[in-house]
Image (tube, rainbow, N blue to C red; front, side, top):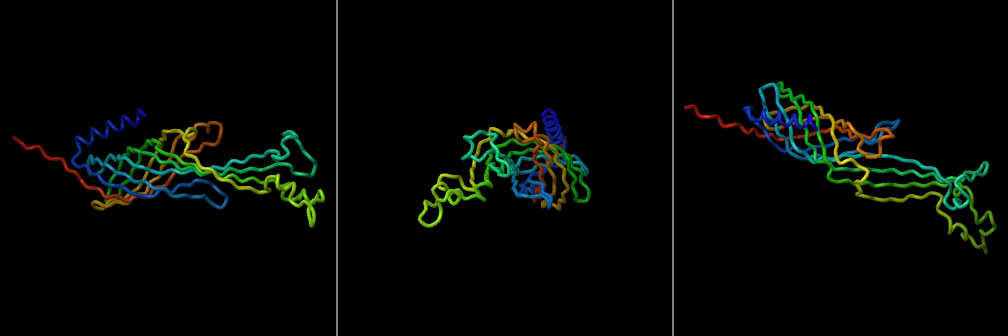
Length: 262
């Protein structure tokens, strides 16, 4: 935070002494790698929209900032194994040789967060190309998580208890036990906007390359978050926000009025 504050002070100082200030709207896509797989990464798209401010120090160097509303996403998968619920009264360590008495559960969570993000970047200008690098700070304003819970009980997939006990078939009480048992394979869904397990502040590095032709510009950049976006992720693999950004912008110069000489 101290570094960001110092950069803002420098930005303000440069704006006083600069010859040209340019401002304009920015709109773009976030390309987010949410999961790594053997066949390749799984990507999702988000949006960012806001305004940029460019303080031109000289023809070579600029300081750029702005304020953006940006979407960030994550995909997490957790697995759990427990004794099948209808056998849990027999104890957590029950086992029968050759028979799988467990229920296997998988929770796939898709996390979507919105941040107010403020970058401070140093920019090198050459022949219309702009090479930028610096830091960003983000403040979370909303969050939504969707969970898909999948449960699989192999015992119920391979054994029909009604038939085994002679209750199935014509004239039998077919389905008597099955009606009181959980399904062999189940899927359920839930959704929450709870932010208790999420950090409200995110910060990291941003670097990019762009091209500005008069007012119109196209930019590609990469954001790399420093910290885990979860509060309870200290003893786990770090889950940080990372994304590629593609942006278009329309910058209008605001020239300073020259002082009249006496």
